[in-house]
Image (cartoon, rainbow, N blue to C red; front, side):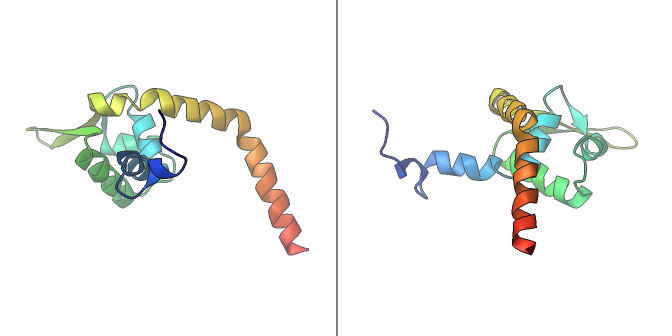
Length: 123
């Protein structure tokens, strides 16, 4: 039996905690960028289109502290660090792919609506 509407997102609910972790645009972008395997920090900056190094570092730390990514440091000169999805992080790949497909199919409609709303507010 499903919980009544709204109960699922009470402040102490695990579903709400999960949504709070992944409902950040940079979290989803970073998880998506790691779908094909380990990446270095600079690769993630390049793949993430517009994220600052500082915000990426904060995002990686948050995802790591929630068990969604691993950080592997290699004892090399210069030092090398790679980030990869954990088994838990990989479970998000299908939902993120579905969200990406939805965005590709409906993204223009969102932009059109935003533009028409902005135009109506200026008149």
